[in-house]
Image (cartoon, rainbow, N blue to C red; front, side):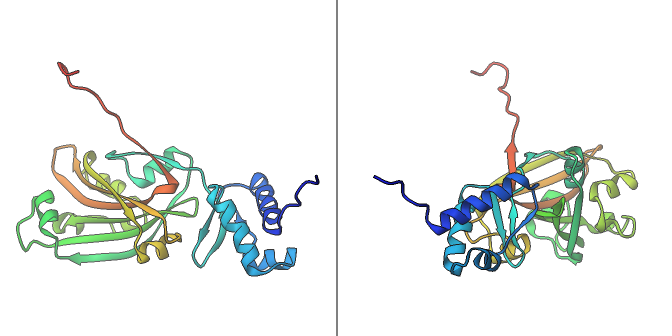
Length: 240
């Protein structure tokens, strides 16, 4: 009995695995067209190989960008008041962002309640895609009371929002959060370079300053596969 010769897609998958082993997280891998040319196979065979390695969690496909070595999941403490920029910096990664929207909005009932605003009050919203070492990690939308928003230094939206708060004497100190999970929408997939089946972890947080005054109501939509989410749980005294 002779050993079965690996199928062509399996040979291509082995080649991709060898590239991943020698590469760094975020490195770009050959496209399907490049694999077709190198191995003289059909696009279907090349795609099958890429899908196989992707299913193993070693690589990720970003719509319109290509195939990349998957970055190691980043730890995230749920409900932490630590900013995205601060969290990435603490892990030796470079944070950056792309601003999608900055301007005046009519806050929702929930946002008014969380921020202590009267009905009809003015607020500002900052929506950004957040990156770590060039990899899109999350979409963040922060709603800020109007008077506070207009006090922030010019150009703050290109850096850390929490550092901008500190610059005007409002130190982010406490966060109250709720977390849920769902499939990514088409817009989220396009902005974050995700496949149709990707899961989004949505964290809604109200951030308070050192005097207990609300600063922002934020929804951050994280790419689930690019994070490890952590929580600290303690039992109350007198309970079992």
